[in-house]
Amino acid sequence: MDFHYADALTHLMGHVVKLYRHNVDLLLQDYDVFPGQPPLLLRLAETDGQMQKELARRIHVKPATLTVMINRMQKAGLVERRPDPHDQRVARVYLTEKGRRAADAVKEALRTIENRCLEHFSLEEKLLFRRLLKQMLDDLEAFRNEIGK
Amino acid sequence: MDFHYADALTHLMGHVVKLYRHNVDLLLQDYDVFPGQPPLLLRLAETDGQMQKELARRIHVKPATLTVMINRMQKAGLVERRPDPHDQRVARVYLTEKGRRAADAVKEALRTIENRCLEHFSLEEKLLFRRLLKQMLDDLEAFRNEIGK
DNA sequence: TACTTATCATTAGTCGACTAACTAAAGGAG
DNA sequence: CTCCTTTAGTTAGTCGACTAATGATAAGTA
Image (cartoon, rainbow over all chains, first blue to last red; front, side):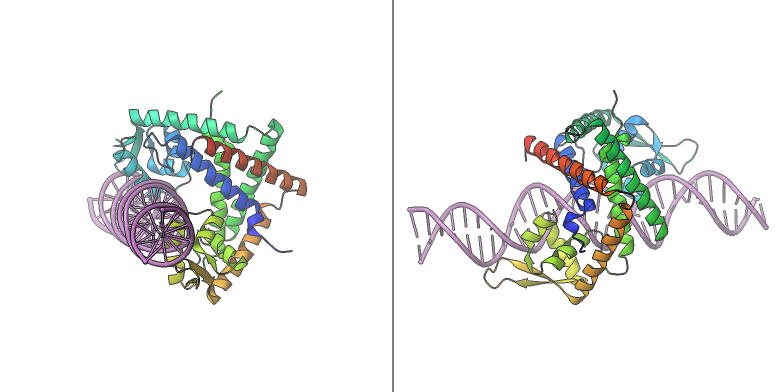
């Protein structure tokens, strides 16, 4: 039996994720918020003043990526960096007022879209869906560890 | 009730897709194939000599993106461009021998990973999973059309 | 204390993706 | 036939993400 990528579940899922991000972006276009920034804004809204390494880990991004993102967001006035008083190596990141407003808009947008794209799901379906995703994640992580770091 | 992005299904799904791509990449690192290229190679393996516009549509990418991708893949010797004899505007894209080998490796890698990350799914679960994803896709598309193209 | 190692962050370079502005060829309307 | 419009593709500039190499501070050890 042949393998057709166009029919693969992973392909379909990739398409969903892409369209999801595009929709988020459309709702946020008046807030100086760019496509990769919503997760970061949400994390900062939860816990302000985290160190970059920690932030990077939480949004599943490498520290080098975060450095550049934060440079841009600082320039846009969404966040600011303040040095840690006890350790000169670490830079802690804080939301500005504008950043806080943006984070609120992000929360609203995500709630809207998440509701919208799950509106035809029953509660059982949501739970099953989550369980299946979690299973995939575990299996993918196991596989990654097999084929080397 | 509060909205926590970390618990959102869309967040989880994004994480799965990212890890999936990373695993594909790990399996393909000896073939001069870069992260965005597998879908393109598969499409060309199915139908060689497509015009760029059509290819772009099929892999869900803008024509401008494809131009740059193909430049790089041409430089890497994976594909080649040949002008269409009946329409001087269109450039048709063909796999080279190396490209065909790479496409085979991609097929093998995707099959492996897809099997691996669905190995704990029953047939019913796979079908349901697909149905739910399809539903999400439809709802997201409807929503995108609402908030303006 | 001085040297070495580990940790946090940044820089440089590359690939993936997008938008906007542009070139060039093909097709139509008058 | 000439002008206008549409269509295919490219270029330029930006953002997201990664790796590898570097700087700078902290912590551990001889």
